[in-house]
Structure formats: structure tokens, C-alpha cells
Picture 1 (cartoon, rainbow, N blue to C red):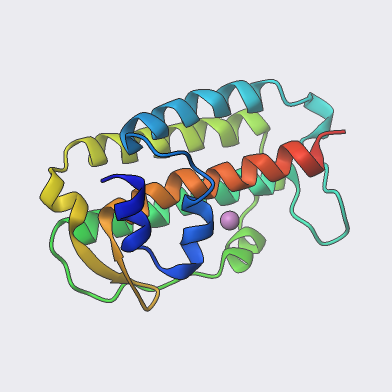
Picture 2 (cartoon, helix red, strand yellow):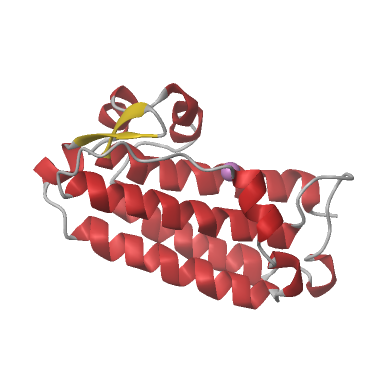
Length: 171
Ligand code: NI
């Protein structure tokens, strides 16, 4: 599914993420982004993983943990919708998830490994889907969406957070 098709089947909230990503093959974009995130996080200074740019903001570790939470939630949505499941899939509160996680007690490399594994699992799943499955529509968090739109949202959402890390967290 290309970018304009993803935008046409995406809830309004995720369009701003998808719009940050240049058009292309979403499977290639997922792979290129993963490689880029490896470089980005492997180069992150050891003593700056706990940094937050303002009181109450997430730390770098929490941002990466949040990206992985989204990877799992979105992957689950992709699976159910691709399998023709019309169940209304629930939303989730990202702030509650981060608050209940122990991201700050883990190492950056541990968090990066978990992201890597979850991303690769989603890539294998998405590669297995034909065009019909990618175009399939379902309901997540009260909104109509397609498998492809969720896949594009994976790229756009991670892109957004990595950009903010680069702009606001890098000292
Ligand atoms: Ni987010």
C-alpha cells in the first residue's frame, strides 16, 4: 500500500505521522528506519539515556520503550485486521503504559534490543500479507483504519519520536 492509500484509510490522528514519511515501499521504509534507529541509539551518549528536557517529560529510555509499546499494539492490530477480524480493537493510554513500565531501570541497549525484535516480528508479519490483506479495513480505538495505514503509522510514529529526540534531547 502506498502513502496516499494509507492516508485515505487512516484515522485523522495518525495522518500527521504518516505525512512525515516520504512515499515509498512501506516494507523498505520499515527496514531502512530500523537500520537508522540502530545507528541513532547505538550512538546515543551513555550518560544521556536518563535525560529529559523538562520536568514531567519522558526520559530517552521511556521514549524508546514507548516506541516499542506502540510497535506491539500496532502489530496486534495488523494481525487481527489482516485476519478479517471485525472486533473493535481497544485504544490504550500511552502515558499509563509508560508509567507502569520500568524503562528507566533498564539499559538503553536492552531497550534497543526489544525494539529490534518487535520491529522484526512486524516486518515478517507484514511481508507475509498480500495486497488484499494490506488493504483490509478494521476498527481500532474507535476509528476505521486499514492494515496498510497501521503499517505506515509504525514508520511515522517512530520517525516522530526519533526526530524529537534529535531536536530536544541531544545536548
Ligand atoms: Ni508516541
